[in-house]
Image (tube, rainbow, N blue to C red):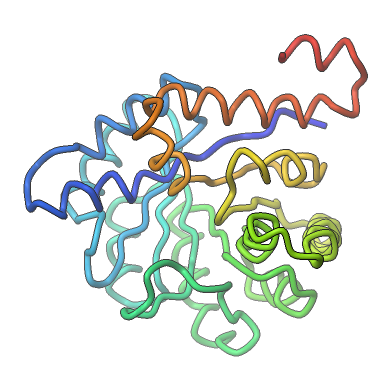
Length: 260
């Protein structure tokens, strides 16, 4: 298996900043630390209500990642406003996600089947501007087929249900992990690059990272929370180590020792 990429989502650094209406902590500083700690790119979700990441943050992050030669993954709703912002900044990637103003966090995957005609022109416009398009979807065969049909480059599998089942010590965790595995196989077979994200922590990262078709994980909330106790650099380095160890598991003891 190839080295697994890590995208660090810095949304909740902005959440803490906005709680006081101040300029600190700075998401751009968090992005710099993340990149130095082993992140392969930065993810940020510009929400319609601007509850955390702001337009100014996207300006800064786009410039920072371009200067560093590393990718910015812009998570965005399928709206004309967000499409225009993405086309203006031309990030490396845009991940289309469902968005409801009343939700605390993204609740489930994008309904690509139900919104096919709405999604197709947005995907086409973004790809036409040289932006890789990812769709955040449930590990559902119909949604993955639809992702291919609308022209996406990537699917990001929603890992939230599995991660929650593990945290709650529920008996369906193994089945939910198997659904993620099957979805990853299906997506790769259809020519889609496979990413995964939502709810991943130190306990759940190993099994997800061990899915060979997955080439990138996007992790944010847990890392920002863990940073309160150990610092952002240490939290990311530990996650990176666990990802690499899981990736090396199938290559034998020598490979595992190399990343220990």
